[in-house]
Length: 108
Image (cartoon, rainbow, N blue to C red):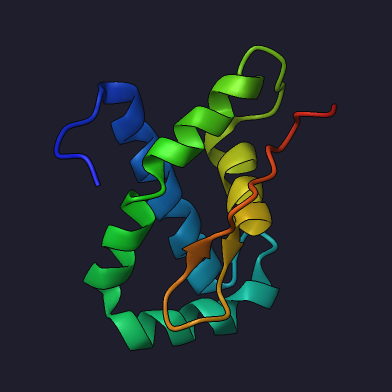
């Protein structure tokens, strides 16, 4: 994980963490992931989960760059949550980014 990020990446990191908190609360239509995410948080602890989520920033920024000029919905409340659903595997001890990522809105 990088030591420093540009301001836009800090916003991405905050949005990623907010989206995970929504998953943990069962909000934003992510109820199906809630139990898996809660189990992961119990295994890793909140700070471990947060560090893992922050490590997704670079990948999310790279994927957002592909669609930012054509994606019409909000980055923070639409794109980031969808990106997490499409690209994060919650079935292990810790959430992992899938090797081949899908970019929401890429084929829109």
